[in-house]
Image (cartoon, rainbow over all chains, first blue to last red; front, side):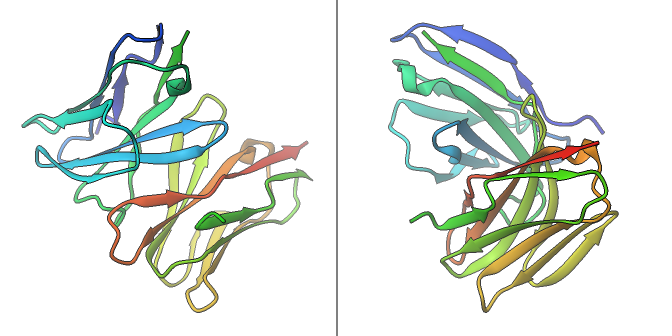
Length: 114
Length: 109
């Protein structure tokens, strides 16, 4: 089975722009979670989608949003980028999610905001 | 205080040594995860525990629910074990993972 894929792998944007990141889960997995990793804050939960519905959301401003499509692929969007949004964005997929089972992580998208 | 605390933050050892990384948490949990992150960012899930002990190859993970503590052990450590090890918990009634800050392990040949 193919693993979790994320595109793009690297991205450079400027302040004020918006960005869309994509995640394709393992075939058959219906839960996709998104995480932000920074040197200062470590890994932090952004949100989780299950069957096209946002099931959980972390403590991030409304500039961070996401969605999930019927084929379980997910996108996250960050609008009005700030310098502090520079981070590694990871997605993880699992069968039913909510941290109750093994999650499979993608390679991440490294975002640099200038 | 973070809900999940790991120790040590950094650990350097010689090849062959027995390694222990600790994770303490302050809330009731339904599951605890140990993750491994190599340079470059890729994360691999090593274990998910809700009680007792699990073993996979040279890796052993234990959890003591009453003491709110988990340990990850590596026997016969090898330079390829060099990575950041991250503990994450799913609190009771919560629907998300909360992560520790990670332990950076370096194994020298």
